[in-house]
Image 1 (cartoon, rainbow, N blue to C red):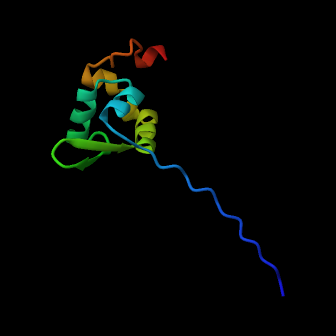
Image 2 (cartoon, rainbow, N blue to C red):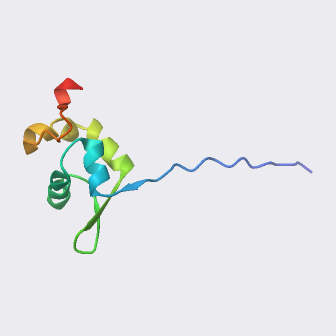
Image 3 (cartoon, helix red, strand yellow):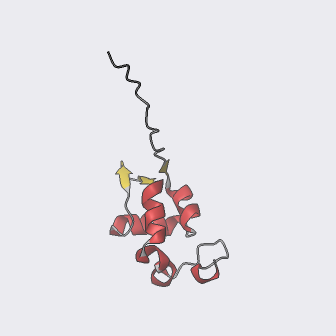
Length: 88
């Protein structure tokens, strides 16, 4: 008889962020996050009339995509962090 030992694979951590945390991560205003979510520019999940949730992995993918890199130019928002994309 062969003794088999199963080694569990670590599950990836799934983090859900709300509007303020998503805005902080992307370096834009919370209002911009809501607008992008409503336009379908940013992957989002809506619960009820006002509550938005965002998967952190979707936001990171957005940052690394061409849509994320040109986000400031399109929205005209500097993000309130004092840092623009070109200065990072």
